Length: 584
Image: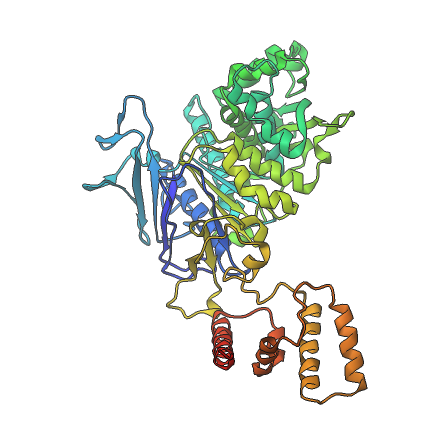
């Protein structure tokens, strides 16, 4: 899917009522082309990601038959969202929406509108008409998958995803009473964090790491792990499944996961005595090729294998006390709810993947997965996820995914994503404060956010970049409209340049003494190695410095748009005056 438009008709966090953003997706692009939000802290860029997550959380909950508008807090009471959704089906045509034929392989515009105290309305927009989508067809109108990630403790972004988990647990409890076979279906929303990264990495290696694989496309799936991280293979890991929490409550498992566990027990020879217990723990040695084959029999790719792990990880939410789960789900105070989910230690979780041992390039001894750095772990999370997404129609919401990375990895980040993920019918939205991270992007891939305190209320708080960032260095990006710095010099060096210019003006006017000469000599020595430390005897440079009214103003590096325009006018005026004085 590709987002086209979002409008929020009521106040939402820092976004004012009526906030609207147009995404301008390129449906003809041959790459996934992530879209980056850039702006100062507090400008609302993360709030846009959070609003999108809240909207799809609400829409997914609303599809559950047991859910009514009055039973849970609606995160955003009134909104409009539009996106292009690709439809794929064998035979060229499939009928999904109220018996209207949908052409496979084409993008259709989906529009969803919710007014206050009303249920949402779904529409499919074609060249000829606007078709209202009703009943079960609404589920097909939503993206297949929505992934969330935050490098820090942004519980605001993770909250709708975690709430969605708890809704699925309630659905499971309801299905148990109905004696429904599949207790928990596929969760559309999924948030990746430290606990889930191991499952992402393992899913990739278990499906594509078999040394006997002949499919070159599958073998190439692991190239990123060796080239970027030096991981040649995973030698072993442990999988632990508990069927009971604190020896009190038997926790339900749906049929698909039951079959997964049955195959594990059978292949790894769990004894009858151990089968009778409420816990199994299996150490899996991947140096034995046969152990890859057991997972290959259960799944066709990393994404489908991860869904088993995901359903097992979802059971860990059962360890959250019922009262806290209810508070998280139904509290109208989202900030209180954020603090009530908590983290369950490994020894109490119902599903754990641990003791992962890596074989690293150039390292003789095995390396525990836990020993990798924060930066490696962060990059592994995103690249493992992108590598795992083989299905189209996916939305990814990443909040500052580059914070722990070194400059080289930041520089290569976007190109690496495009190298890994060849399908183009998904959308990745990211926030960042890093000029290296966005270098090389086109202007259509960068949206700039501003704080309302710096602009009138009737001006949108966002805009696309005015020019491509390709070919610009970091200095040029920092001093562009994106970051609004007037210089990339450190403040101390800038102050020395200003002082030096003042002293040169005094000397030029004949207003000097021994102390002035000595200070200027010292400054010249200190600044001698700076590339743009130009001699003052250039007549144009001298006249330019003389024409500046107040050099003190040029110590400031954080300028508003108005101040930048005023400074530009001053510079233009000085240059015009100098040009008039240049002899023919």
